[in-house]
Image (tube, rainbow, N blue to C red; front, side, top):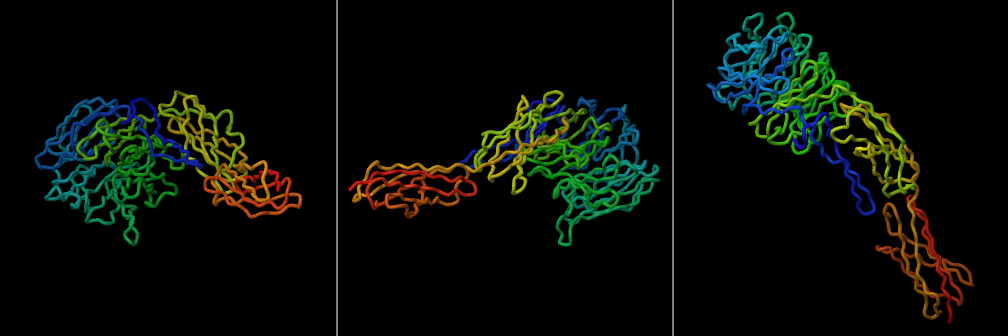
Length: 576
């Protein structure tokens, strides 16, 4: 992770502003920076299968997988909510899949040929039931008062991704084969209201995997809604990494590596009317978890560099509060959130996230505490701009001040800005709020007339949004000028040469300027041939005067939609 540990930091993008030539380019750089976890623990194994959180006794159980060889033993590491290791349980065979019963008195662990239970206070083991052999790794879910688990079997570990997997259970104390089965390492997730999700990862035997909701009440297992996601052409198939019920059970979130975070209606698995914003560019969904208090959703991802690997945000997709973003980088933190790697404490005060390195051979446990309090924010003093006269095609700075209650934010707050003119509303990106609350939005208006700037602070998990602030600027045409250099005297026979320069501020002219030349002498006024301004802004006028005495040359440019007109004159005294 690339920042020191300190509470309540928000990662956000930085506004990069570059002046280039006559124009101003504003770009939002994807430079998110990590908000540090409250605790990070290196896990004592090189594989991972499951995490379970006991909020009654404040215990976190993390299991390895270790299914590479049939004689392998397993490990369940046990931590408290502060990250201190309480004990390490060694299982008699490889362990995969963990689940807690309703009152958190028992931890269920899936072993190679049995389901083991552990007392959650003494950690004493007991055999629950022998099972069919699992060679690939189980999934466990406690739902409707019963324990359900998967039993995949493959003669070779390398073929586990396409193994035939059976859904079994210990129903009313009896090992039961439910009759449901399909290919791949089927995933299970329990939810409120005696519901259970079953999802199929994409594999060579399942080009269009399914997601299904089951009713587990009364010791039965009844399938309700089910969905496959590919269209008629085979596009859009689910690439399942994780799934979770919302706190009230009304929604299902799916971490789909091919799509992002899907939000579905539980009753029919149709897309919810409002979904979550896309994950940051370059991030691939790997995990998802709702807090039981209904406030937050955590969306884990696999990403590289400064791209966030974890977003913690309001569970309500219509809430535009900016997410808390985490970047995990390297040997102190891992590089990404592991699939099926997140669980919340029951009160929503802690998120437990398992991360892994890119190679998948090391694992870390992060304990994250979203802020319990949000503080008010407000814009003060209105907005100002400089220069006082805004000009089309030239840089303009809009300045303001944002005040926030509570402790100083660990990373700078960001405001977003838009400009609305006759052609519509234009996004100007974000600007950093300095320690004193001031900020500057840089822009280059490209249209003459009124431009209204709106500055917004959408809030974050620590701060409430501020009421938007607007400021209207009258944008004028950019000035132009003509400068002439002429001799004081000339002769009829020798002719006259006048040199000059033409300059235009603001946006570059689409074509070279063409200047009108008018000559006035004692015989009258007439228009001469126009002259084109050179690429370097210079102009040359050659003329043979037609009479003696004073001759005045007036050079003008009419202006255009973005530039003012300009004129200049020079008088020459002509002799024989």
